Length: 179
Image 1 (cartoon, rainbow, N blue to C red):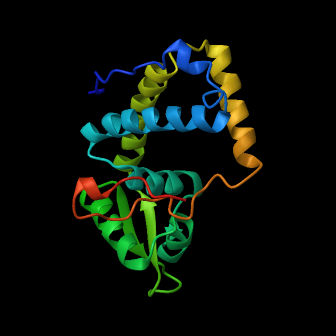
Image 2 (spheres, helix red, strand yellow):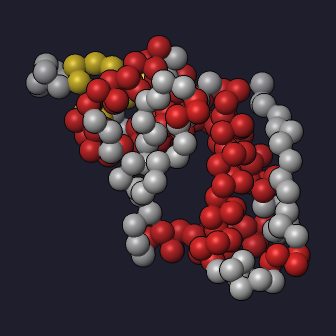
């Protein structure tokens, strides 16, 4: 079942778009990022996922089975937070943990078939978020926006040291980390 989203995106009033502060890409991107993050959270919540889960699952999809130590470095987590994250993903059936045959001390993490299916569901959910947030843009404009954002990200640091959220006691504690 594909989730539906009823969150409302409130466009910036035209008179605010003309202010000098609003003309700065930083301000516009920050506002857009906040709106997208709220919609992102709403989109994946029915799937039982959080951003930190998706960072890990996406890494496994993109890079294949990974040693636990590699995930620590790639996700920027300490060992205890990674173990908690992997426990959540394993309990949900989204990953499979095994031991490296060459070095039994080394844990190997891979995406399960259910994890692959979940990522396809997430992709559909995020497509709906794009459609809602970027409704004012044509398909060509969206493609241009993606190209420009990818180019801008490739020219500087796109990944925050704290990209994956920490494991938190309550949802209120889990604001996106500052880079």
